[in-house]
Image 1: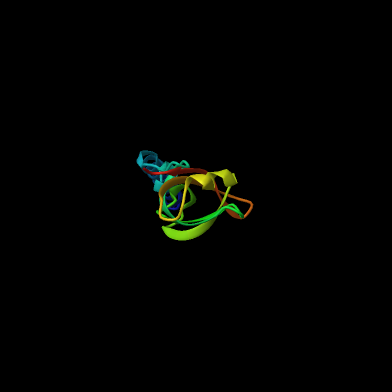
Image 2 (image 1 turned 135 degrees about the horizontal axis):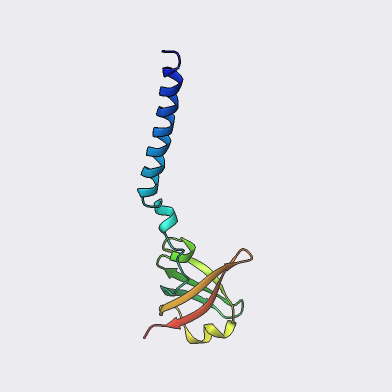
Length: 113
């Protein structure tokens, strides 16, 4: 009887590790490992204010998915001040922005016609 208990315990451990590894092998990966990073893309918005002197533009925008930013109105710095020659307050736009050195920088700005 004394030999049966250690043998029974060893069998139980072996079966449980066999069962858990086969179950884990059949499970799909966790959802967060299946998600692909969101690639930067253009975001829709409306120009609220243009400041050509400082190179800044205020845009009311939709969700910026690649930055996980909800819709809001905010001031952006433009990579190139000449982008602001194409837009004025009230224009519907599509734009690309990046977060760099603590600033939101517009790298592409297209007026929607």
